[in-house]
Length: 273
Image 1 (cartoon, rainbow, N blue to C red):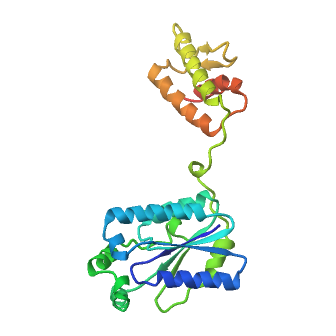
Image 2 (image 1 turned 135 degrees about the horizontal axis):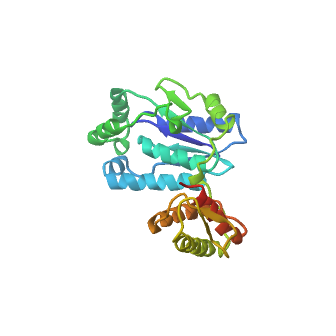
Image 3 (image 1 turned 90 degrees about the vertical axis):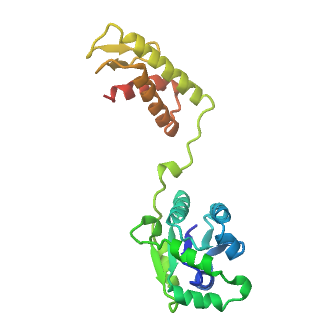
């Protein structure tokens, strides 16, 4: 179901806010099943090595994709400081036809450093990693669709659980992009027939236009009764390009009757200049 992306620099209280939100949902909306997804690994080892951090983001993305179901609210307790990563998570949520929001935990660097120093030594960031994360942090912007709705929480503020709930459960989910939807199932011989039929039509056009001029028609019988109107003489390269475009379209919009493919391709050619 919905996805909540926690977001913030080091020691901004992301884990505490995620726990508060989890407890709020369990108390006020017991019908909501919450799953907390957290970053795993030592802070300095993880964020101090680019390859390890990239691997960690991949693991988080996979875990979110696995747990994002109709029965669960997923709270991602991680820095999520890269806007491109937040966009990827937004696309995962959108593909599942569900809502999402971002909770941004704001904090001044000096206050965050004081919090860091008050932690146990094993949980502290070292100075280099701490400063680097603040420098690299890309703050969410509510004008970006992947950062909206956006809830900004100051250190002294409480998370507005009711507002988060309304944003997730009383708002219509954005429609998934065509590219993020599951492709329709194709008949076992559909792609073969599509490839063979379009090749045959191209051969008919190339041979049929010989000796003809602009304004005349070319027959593709016995493949189809449809006729191609010549607005110009086609080159093999041009027909190959149009054939690829038509095949791509048909993969997204397959037909049940393969006998219609030749007619559809001719109509497609007639619709291009």
